Image (tube, rainbow, N blue to C red):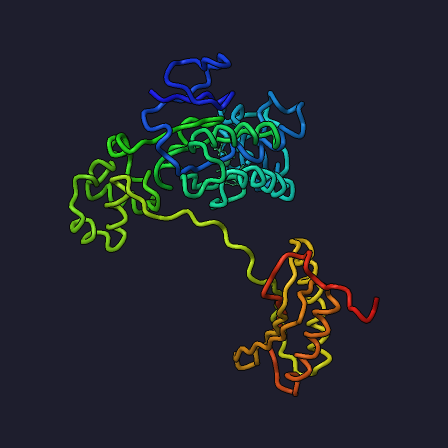
Length: 386
Ligand code: TTP
Ligand code: MG
């Protein structure tokens, strides 16, 4: 059976241990090299980052969240989970279950940075990455989309290894032939897992699972289905599509497909930012031009700061106003060169505003920059000022 070493990332014909490096971290599966849709999810994400940054915490139960009061657990590390703490549990309860836990407050800015560092590894393998949150993403590693000519399983083993080495945290990987099954697989043997759901086994494996394992079936829907005697996905598999549609409307069609392991949703790369804007609604309607200008200026500064932070610049400045009777109007001005500078945006914004501030009462003002490009092209020096 085709096999792959998760330590040296080399494929081999069959066996329990890697013939090259001797590692026992081997994954084998009949469809190992035929599947290419993956889901990856970091293990105990926030807690793993905290352990990475403070090795004294490594072997301790760690809970990330605000201690005391009405704080809740954002995540618990795998050592703490043995005692019962889970995400969203009240902190006092988690500490009752695991009194020895070290509580660390969350540091979102840091987790965002780690998420970007992970992404910098993933983009080496494919441009088709669809993030679901800071710590999980779908990857399309099919032959026509991957950037390295190796089977998806090999690329995934390499990505997991690279994230451990370069970013310092572990991930779990699910590999299958669609999003629904890849996500289900990644959850199977956390932490540091690698699981596969192949075409030949999907329907059989799904049949024994509860209906709540289907993407989109929440507690309320599951309860409704159970009341009708539909408890497992196997029950759904035995029902005709027309019957499911009659009972559940359009969702019935979704259930019919998912129960058979069919999920046609494509992996769509996250779209680049199309515009950067900011707006404010006034506490009281404003008529005077100078008052409108005073409200506009800080918005311009915020937009410029965000453009700078994201290394973006834009050709078009858009002024937005809403009149007291809720009529929206936008006014655009396109520049010959893209800008990210507050003074340039302000100059355009102020002149667009001047034409509109004719005594009418306004309830909202906003400013945006669109037709974006990277910041490197912005604001070339004026030839005459050299
Ligand atoms: P998850 O991926 O759901 O959880 P996890 O990464 O901590 O653990 P697992 O190994 O099971 O994947 O969520 C990612 C992060 O999102 C998690 O580290 C903390 C945060 N989070 C919350 O803040 N509140 C929540 O209720 C959940 C579920 C997660
Ligand atoms: Mg996770």
